[in-house]
Length: 501
Image 1 (tube, rainbow, N blue to C red):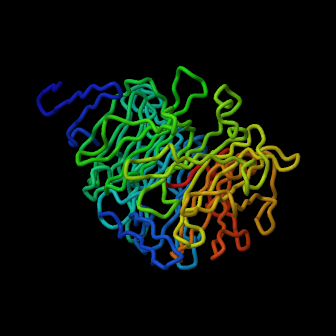
Image 2: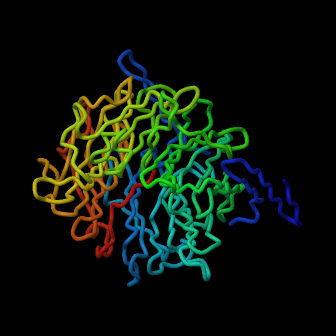
């Protein structure tokens, strides 16, 4: 059904899954060169992916981080985001930048409760050769609408991030725009697209973007299935040269029901129809609350890793590995994610350090990157509610090596604040591992590990960086930095809640 009015076309494509509304870009407010890996007989050669995290164009990936609870100008929980830049020596805290909604060139103003930095993704939106930072503020009030939310871009450039524009704002009470976001080239035109969620559906902003924040086109998929989206991840799961979108969702009719949905990219962008990832027996594969995408087994298809931390419900009868949290690896293929080839791990799995205990939160944060340069993506897994002895919720991080057959558990290494050579001391409620990110900031072919602990020092939060060697990530040479380095207010800031994806 098409509805035409002066200056606007609304197309409703009703399916059992969604409705689609397309607006002209006027009504709304070059990817970097791909990284390559040299091939040797012992090395996998994963599909190249565009560099999406080089904000100053110097060839070294950078790391952005959030503090959504931070006080800004006396306004509590206004939030900020920051960045440290990569170099031949790795990440350099001396190159730090911090941005709030009061920073020059950033739209709007910092207000109490905005939670600026609740989500964050990066990509080159305007094709100028510099990656840009997209920041969500789901608690932002828009006019009289509380928590309508907003999505803001901070532009990259030769001198780093500066200035910005509004990409999207919510238009109803509790719309929550910017709570979750993902970026990908869903139509294969070489321009990056942005996806975010609102109360009633999914918003797809198609690139390239203008410097005023306007997109080439905007679509909205209206949710007809009463689903609650928990996380998003983009990747080319079927190898057709266009990114697809995976989502983990909650079915409202069953408390612990989780499923994994995939929308394929195509010539016109994301499909309004989705498929559900299923097991070999035809039943849906159990999903979770977190999801990430990357190349684990070294082939050309992007793979999924899903974290499920909820436990103690009926579905545990079918998933005993849910105890303490679990992760599910789902390989990509020519037909998309293969749920029938999924592998499940928790802390009771062979080779994985630790013991699965109730409410550990294994899988609460996830990242994929090659930590030892063998061409296979390794999986960093946050366990933020891990108890260390009698120290409750101190937290830890585990890294599962990738292989040609995906993760096996063998060779998994773990870190916490009581590990030798790691700065600090494990304390109750630090939640070390609430955020993890593997990033090759010195471009030596091995990804360093960044870790956030938003509960450190009574919810002030802090950040850690672990170097990588030919043997993988190591604690030797690791360092930490926080509000003292950044010059920010630490009270309840929750620095290290998330990193750019």
